[in-house]
Length: 558
Image 1: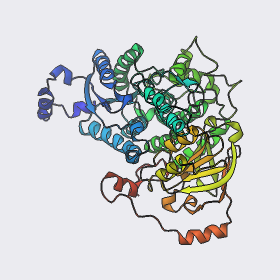
Image 2: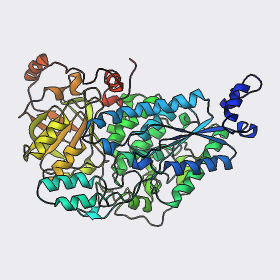
Image 3: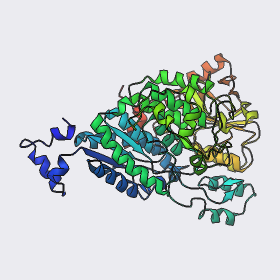
Image 4: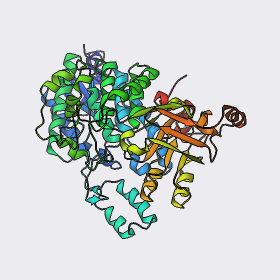
């Protein structure tokens, strides 16, 4: 018996039937599978702006396949709006709220299946966490990426072009009027940002996990094909309910391997590591084991796709070149082809029926002739980060894969940004931004603006930036994030002083603080954890319960 039928039986649950009927549902509606449509639509997030119309197409598909759709709202905040201000502290913590939101609605109403609608940075992983937790038939459908704007700095502009332009204005390389004109054109329509940042990375990883229908990650938001795949998603979720193909049969060790492969093969956002760890935890997989997979898989997965910010090509170009199905077909020998997907077929069966006539080999290459023999994500370890930290070799110029410099230490993002814009950073510096981890931030903010400012003033190729915070997927330069343990927990990053020498060695997967252990021991004796920045509200709770970035920065009960 379906879950919904258990609470809609007559006469014991006539009250529940009356609740539905008060909203216009009929007996015939209540005899069908009740399918939730969890919609993160809002007028605050470009990636969610079209989800109202997408939801209507999904519901039509559910009706056509013999189900009854019930739509409900879920929160979702915009990383872009929150960049470089207090709002960013709430972005990563919102991921757990989204998962909890969906769990509460699905379980309180005993729904039979769920379609999860979301496109952006923490929204998609939050929805995937809910799917893994609930173990019900589930499909995630993004709203699709935004198209690029006019060419700026030798590539199609996007929303982040404004931050780069701001640095150029400060350096006297761009007129303010040109910057303000770009506000009207760099985001020509709704959708997740048109570069391969965290939002599009997570949509692509959902597809690689098997939780999104093939091609569903990258169809641009404004394309008619987005409407068609929404209808198909509605039809398919009813089929999954009838066949009892649940999310736990899809999100498992095999599919997690596939997602990590795709993350590396495409040079996706470093935040993909954080989020896959969180999804894996909900699926009952060990965080240390998943971190080991990141270390190993990154070393033997070739980088075969390059998209903005790693190249001039944006998400629309990636889509036309075959997107995630084409990437997976190219690296098929490395994948678990027997992994189940929401099509009701395995990865191998999906790829057998896939073909693309328009592959641009400047966007997607082959395993035999890749952009690089190693993947786009690297885990570094050393005395500066015993639990590991994350960098993105695909976004770093090869000559900067080894960087040695002197520390310039800042206890927060704003301090660093001020120093950068006032000319306080010079060539050869390693900018250290600490107390921005999950607990210390709290909320593990992205050091997006600091990197963009370095780029804009011309220092991106002669400095490095390390942090216990995070980075946006659009950042480039030499950067290392997710340093664990974080400063607020007394990790080695808390002990760095101005002038200390630091080495970032990506080829050897090492990060080293060149200070004698005896000196570090004396500094450790003097260390005092800072007082919490928040003593009430959700961030106070998050700062107490957040796990290390090496465990996905999820809320931990113990």
